[in-house]
Length: 452
Image (cartoon, rainbow, N blue to C red; front, side, top):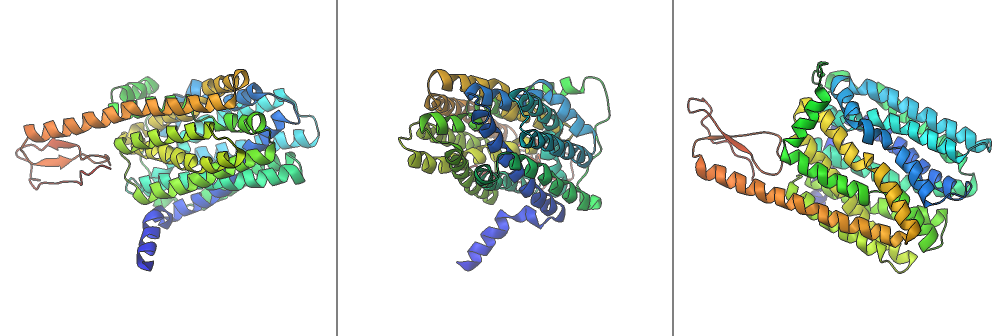
């Protein structure tokens, strides 16, 4: 039994054995904890000291992701062209400066709602370049073999921080004031910069940057649209991103207007969801076999979990139900992320992941005000329930894609009896192509075709 536990631990944390990724992971734990601390503090600042509404929270949240929505493919193109580590040096430094400015404004009692909006938009422009660079840099640290495991561990990292950050943020707001959260978040970015500086460049899996040319953004869009394995998951994620992944809007509103709580209850909501997400991320890291069918199944579970939270009769029940919802949410994100990275051409990976960022985060400027408005004119329960239904419906095309892939592989196997070679990079099914008759590689190369 003890040996099985050790083996499970090694399998779950395989990517941590890579020194560069281990440094990155440590720095990110500190930095992302600070980011979630600021997320809680910003919502509290708007709703309470500045006496804002749900729409105000939604606007501030939307502005953080509006640049991704409008200019996302350009950020991905920069990630394909430029040294990703240099991009991260710049983005982390600027993000820390923006947090420091907000902290000073709060401490000097000069902060206004307009200033919160402006600084949120500034952070949005940082995320435009940071998000695709950060996601694709993971493959440069660990290589494609460990990529699914590293992506899942990244999800664990983010959601461990989601537990740590709001918990610390709630305590700090009550004891030292909301401004302290912004100062600590500004300092936390230094951890990532130090980690980046300590990495060994010789151990990175670098590939040459894409040479500058005209039409590269359009080329990326055409590539995704012509590739169903990328197009369908991205469209499904866009639907989920608009209607479901706006918990920084719906959960504080649920805490304040449905259960008549304050910062403490909102912190408990985030802690419960984050704790569940850690469990979901670890389970995904252990499995590390992303597939379209798995992504669709997780989407259905995630949607149903959101619906149960929307119907929670009491605070205690809502907190308990947020744990499985958090587990399903991060499993969905991690599986989608790994699937897209593994199925995309390396030269296109930055642009593909920028489109994923648009679907997941860039959709916030649409979804956050919409859900904030729905919450104001009805109740936060209705806004949450809408997200649950949309998530279940968005999973249907994923099931259809999986069925087409299975039929396609079966038809190819019946038609071609020549030796087959595996096309690498597809973790769901072994895509096969006929080898030329004169090819020296006549050994039947097979990959485990099991899906789950």
